[in-house]
Image 1: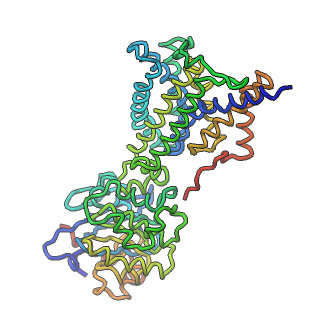
Image 2: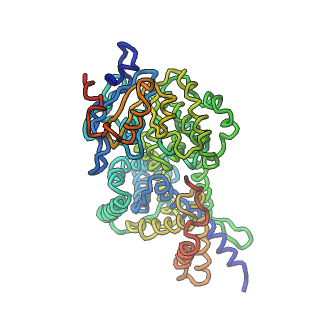
Image 3: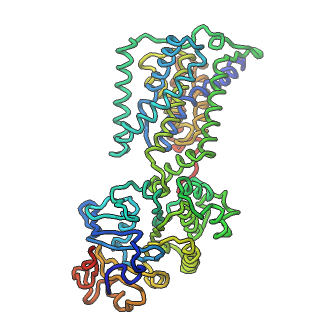
Length: 263
Length: 293
C-alpha cells in the first residue's frame, strides 16, 4: 500500500478533509493513537474496525464533539481543530450520528427543518429529501418515534443533507437495522454522491464497506492497521487488520502506512 | 348552609390560578429546556416589580404600560444571566445550577433589603382596575384577576405558538431533546438556551407586575410566595408542560380557595396538601409531558 490518499485522490487535488496525527483520550483511556487520513473530494472513504476500535471517536472528533489531545483536523485547507461543532456544521461538515439521534418531540418535518436552520446554499432541500424517500412526505407530521429504525435513519440522513454539507459523516448507518434495510439505505448512496458530496463513513459491516467505498481505512484499538483501495487489499489482509491476527498486530507499524505520509 | 360561598370559592380559585400559571410558566420553561431549576425565579419576579415601580416613578407612564419596559429589560437580563452565570454552572453540572441560582436568590433578596428596605410596596394601588369588580348574582369578579387570567392564557398561547411555529422555537425544543444533535445541525445551544431564558424571564417580568398589583411586594415575597406557588403549580400540572402550568395553577388556586372557605388559616395549607398528594400519587403531574425518545 502507498501513502494515504495516493491511490484514490485525483492527481494534484488537495484533500477536502485531512486528519493529522490525531490522539484522543477518554479520560485516562487512549481511544485514538496517532491517526492520519486524507479524504479527497467526491470520495467515499470508509473506516472499518471492530467494536471499540475508535471509529466513532474519530468521527466525533472530526465533527467537533470531542477535543483531541494532540493532532489536528483540517477542513478545506483550514485548521478546524479548535472550532466548535456548530461552526464546523455551518462550514460544511455534517454528521449522521450513531444511533440516529433524532429529536424525539419533533415531527419528521420539524427534524428536517432543524437540519436546514443554518444550511449552506446548495441543491438539497426538504422537498428534495421527500422526493428521494417517497414515503416521507405523507408521514411528515408524525413524531419520529412512530417510524421504523430504517425510516428513522432516512430522516437522520435527510436532516444532515438539507444542511448542504460538503462532507457527510455517516456513523454506523447499519447499527440495529435489518440487512435488507441496510442495503436499501446504502443503495441511496450513489444518488447522494451525484450532488458532489464527499462521504466519510464508519461501518462495522466490512463487506458493506468494501462494496461502497473508494478507500478503506481499518482501525484496531485506536491504531491504523490497514489502508488502501478496496481493489488493492485482499480479504486476508482485511481480516488480519480487523481482528489483529497474524503479523498485523496493531503495535507493529509495518502495516500502518501513515508513517510515510507526513507532508 | 348555602352552596353559593363554595361556588364563589371555586371561581375565585380558578381566577387566581391564572396568576399562579404566570408564576409557573417561566420556571417550567427553564426546567424543560435547560434542566435548570431556577431558585431565584421568585426573587427575579420581585425585582421586575420593583423595576416597574421605578419606571413609573421616573417616567410617569401609566402603570399598566410599565410592562413595555419591564418585559424587555427582564428578557435581556435573562439572556445575560443564562449566557454567563447559569451557563457556567451548567457546564459543571446540573446540580451546580441549584447552588448558583440559590446564591443568586440570596444576593437579590439582600440587595433589595439593602436598597429598598423591608417595606412592602404595591403597584398601581388605587387604580380602578386593581380595586374594581363586578357582580354576577352574588359572585364578585375582580377586574384584575380576570385581566391576569387573560394575560396568563395569552402568554401560554404565545409561548406555544413561538415554540411550535418559529425557527428558534423549534431549535429550543430540538436542543431540549438532544443538545449534541442540534449542534451537528449548526445550532449554538448556548445561544438557544439564552433565548429560552429570555422568554422565561419575560414571563417572570409579567408575573412580578401582576403580583405587585394583586398583592404587595417585599424583598422576601419572591421565595416565600412566588417561588413556592410556582413550584407547586409546576409539579401539580406536570414538569416541563406549558399548559400543565395553567392546570396546576388552577388546581392550586381552587384548593387554596376551598381550604380558605373551610377555615381561613387552611388556605395555604390546602394548596400544599394537594401538591403533596400529586407528588405521591401522580408524580409526573396531571398533564404528563409528551414522551421523549
